[in-house]
Length: 476
Image 1 (cartoon, rainbow, N blue to C red):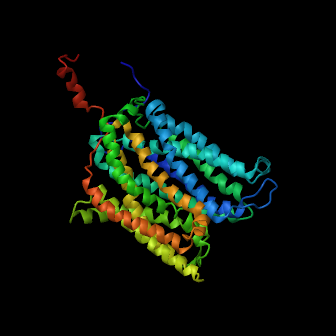
Image 2: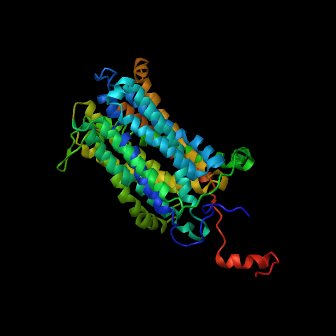
Image 3: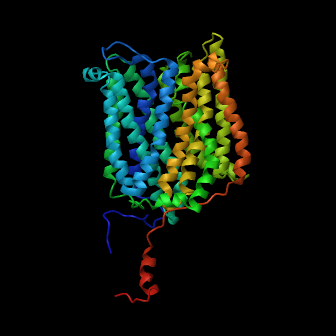
């Protein structure tokens, strides 16, 4: 029988799999790199972008918003390619490792934009190339990383799966919180500027890649199943799974259309018109969304160990119910943002504390929609379709980002046609969209029937000892 260099099935243990710390450490560093770059991207495009002569040549706000969401969307549709590579050819581990190297080159390309080399090539070309490489790297590994977490578990320790996806998300927000605070400081400090603000995420991505490689002997390496999974996708069961799961994803699309406005997007631009002094802290506009990551760090253990068990005493808090509650909370957060923009449109300069309130509500919604959605997507997928179903989940993020992107590009034309979606009208539109989707979700989700698919495990020691007898062979 052929042997493999690494374990290909989860160990039969009741505790935490040994590869999990390396995966979570990798994810924390990778998210530092991505969210640090993302936090400063739209402000860089509207304030610091230069032409090939070194003169400032920034984009307008609505154009920058449109391209920002196009970039985010591309990062989240690229997982389809990553899933095909992982499930069809390389497996999840090699896909993550190889595309992480591409990811590093993307960050370092952005770091060179404001250098003499970057000016010679052209800052806009450097920006486009860097974002393209990050799209390939970040997008390609996305469906593999979260699926790789689930691959470490089997029946004997599946009770830890929800908790581990919570800690996985915890590492995301720990890494992103540091970078969202630090990268804007580097960007706005004349002693450092864009090369260092974009270079630091590149260094962290290199560290993430190294941590992942160091854990290679501790992880379960589920081998690729070949392109047969595409046949599974077109089978009756595969089409049934896709049909059922998109009943839910249709609503998370709207959630992502709103959430991604808070992370370096429209909420950041709104911050430029707020009083950024709060409790003795003076925020930069790009730094305010750091509270989202901090709140997630607090909410994950609070929800997992207290709120969810408390609510479950009164009625079963299923994955679908968590997502539904999260959708309503997201709509409520945009009610606050809508109100803030109304004050700005009337000449006021509201306190950033109001936006912090919106972040508290949105972060609670994020815990219930995004973390639950990760676990939900993994457990609803047959083993040969794990990465592909994760890619489907991420596709909902990509489609969601197309909504604000297209609206941002079309704002002048819509206004000329008599439909004004600027200012407070913009946030009112998304508030009502999310609220309507939440109400419809309540009725649609009742018809979904959840299933659970987990990786098979290696046999226990006792099972191995009895296998020869079961086969009619006497052990020697």
